[in-house]
Image 1 (cartoon, rainbow, N blue to C red):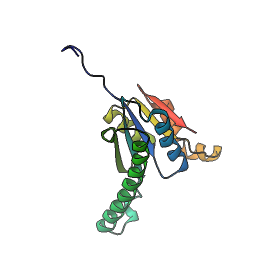
Image 2: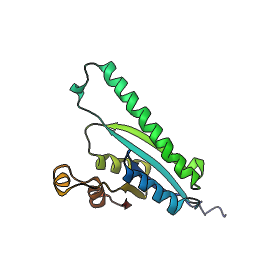
Image 3: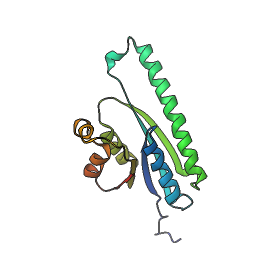
Image 4: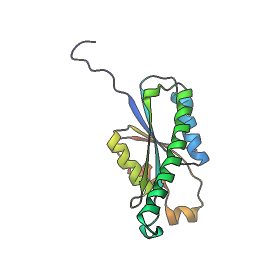
Length: 157
């Protein structure tokens, strides 16, 4: 490689997951589709919705709740990470991040994380909601498709 050539940068995928079957399918899709191919980095993201502040009697109770939720999220993320490693992703190319989110929607938190990590692709599983549920609560995947800029969005069925 000459001095004016830079190494090819990995394509960075952000997979937003939870405990659902649709999230598992999204991880398996990426594992099957890209596992073993060089040039890809994956970050698994779990966003835990926080209850309102008045849900807790005191700060210690809130701290215990946060610790419990983050421990469970990290355990789930490590399991998903192992799926990707077994499919051929190198160990240094699969990371994960769990966070507690109170004020923003899932889609806003995913989009902000995508920007922070400069990911070129967002991958999510499609949750099946009734039309009423989608009208009342919205659809994370639909909002991502409409609001994501300068990246691809893969919605895995």
